[in-house]
Amino acid sequence: ETGVTQTPRHLVMGMTNKKSLKCEQHLGHNAMYWYKQSAKKPLELMFVYNFKEQTENNSVPSRFSPECPNSSHLFLHLHTLQPEDSALYLCASSPSTSGLSYEQYFGPGTRLTVT
Amino acid sequence: GNSVTQMEGPVTLSEEVFLTINCTYTATGYPSLFWYVQYPGEGLQLLLKATKADDKGSNKGFEATYRKETTSFHLEKGSVQVSDSAVYFCALAVYGGKLIFGQGTELSVKP
Image (cartoon, rainbow over all chains, first blue to last red; front, top):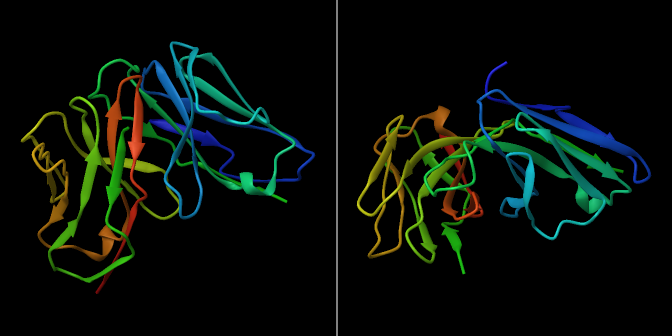
């Protein structure tokens, strides 16, 4: 595997379910990110991790719970979601969060539908 | 605050015509600027970047120049192809590793 991978690619869940999204990067990066992409809205940054430590929580509801066990893996645990949480969830990585010139590398995303 | 504004889409063009997608930004300091592209069903891919004023980023026939005086980073291509159909995002980087994205511009190129 190369780059940034995400599983599953598609997920349908009920509002009472608990599920997790997984992201893995094979680039040797130290920073990882979760974004939410909804139709007709700009990408929304949700969480940032740098060297496994959370450095940003962009006022995300507690029904989204991130986990970063090491610099290569990032999870997003989901529980009691709402229909408006249906979106494409994108994971990204970068060498670190310091400096302004580092680009972020994105995974293909998980298309989440909450019923 | 920091923000990015892109031209509204969708933009529909015929193959081989000139493309411009406008992007302007508001930022404190001197951010790096990026263009990302998202093909249907995929994540975002970095298309090009510029890290300081007057820098020109280029890739796959696309170009954008970092214009500090007009706070702009317009994307251009001399001759678009059907395969360029995608959504294009302008973004700026701020401290803390955050990217601020524009709303995206959908491009559709017809043969």
